Image 1 (cartoon, helix red, strand yellow):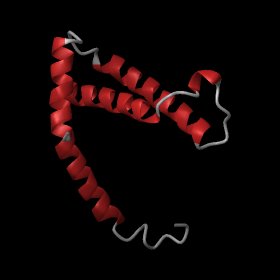
Image 2 (cartoon, rainbow, N blue to C red):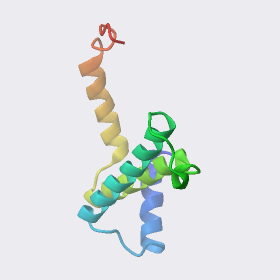
Image 3 (cartoon, rainbow, N blue to C red):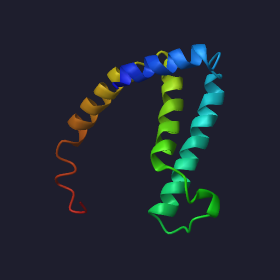
Length: 107
């Protein structure tokens, strides 16, 4: 599925099953919550924190998909074409960082 297809799929789901989008501010708060849930799993799985029993069976991919879902909702609500935005962002990073990482002795 392309990013464009994902944006259309989410919009269709919202309009038929979800009834309507939450407000942009509510979705921003939800995005923050979802990122926090993802961070908690990563901190426990790859970091130094021990697992809480309630987190042990959490699916990392599902947590990432929750973040993506809400981000797509926000893009749809604000008229952002994520495919185009990502393309421009990648071009910006390539231009800015083309030599920076190669010349970084820490890497």
